[in-house]
Image (cartoon, rainbow, N blue to C red):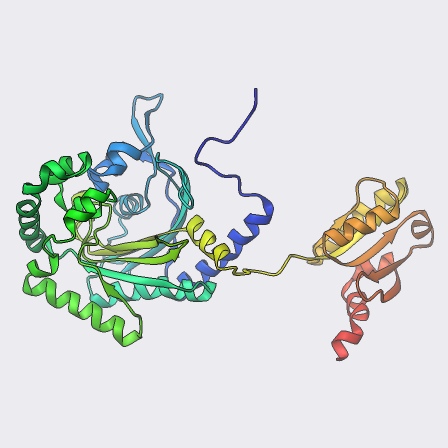
Length: 431
């Protein structure tokens, strides 16, 4: 039997995981600067949580969700997106309690699962950064979170990402727009794609999000949500735009933009980059003020986004961004003989306890082959340990590039390697 990874998944090998760790470190730093705290929720939850949150008519529920019955007969689903789980945790753990400071600001990095056709930057198991800010409604909250995503892109050195902005208005505005959209689309019903015909009366806003060519052509002249905003929704959106302009964050209003989930209201946004001639959404989110209450929690305004990590890394590669220098090794210990093998284990652990990054040879090869391994690992220093070194207690520490060499004793290294390290690098330090 030939074992292969499941279709739509990827192995993240050590050379790639180093890039992931770098991106994660930058993201953690940015989120921390904005006072967001990490939350970790289960990989699977009840099917109802996701089906109700994302909408029974959404593609996620009808086509993409990985769901199954467990051994206890419970209907379970693998997490297709992060917001629903975060909201469930907010309610279940009573993070809305009066003594907890508002807004509650959380972030997560989690694998998501959707059954769809694998393509570049889109897998069946993929990973997202997500942030959720719960408890306060203020245009400044919307703008802060958009600015945080923008700051992350800038700190990673990613360029060419553009902000698209829209509003879905409040419930009153959405209802008025929904009817106007149905009235506009109904005469074109026979020309719409099969999915859009199904959505026409269930959730007509989703027709605007269709990627089918026939639907795109029809919705080009559809009425704009901006013409159906009531005074309060219009004022809120104007304030969001003014704050973005005050921060110098450029944006384009796209009145046909909707998000793929049912729970959004008012401000929605996407960060889009041009890649190989195609527009690619790398980050998207918005306001969802009714979701906590929908799940029987208290009325809680909220705002958040999801950001695809695989897409982020793909964009960085296309833009030839060198995230980090190659990792180096502080010390490589070349080992010759059985007595040296015993001592090498002790020496390696002693150096690691002193916070040096160390590797040793395990293969009992000739010294020349061991030195080549040290070169491949990027070792700065080499310690050669053989029978003579064990007998005399003296070892030579050599810099792999400058060839500068220091003779010391094993006991001195056990006491503290730092003086030896400083002696090796004395010329560089003096410069």
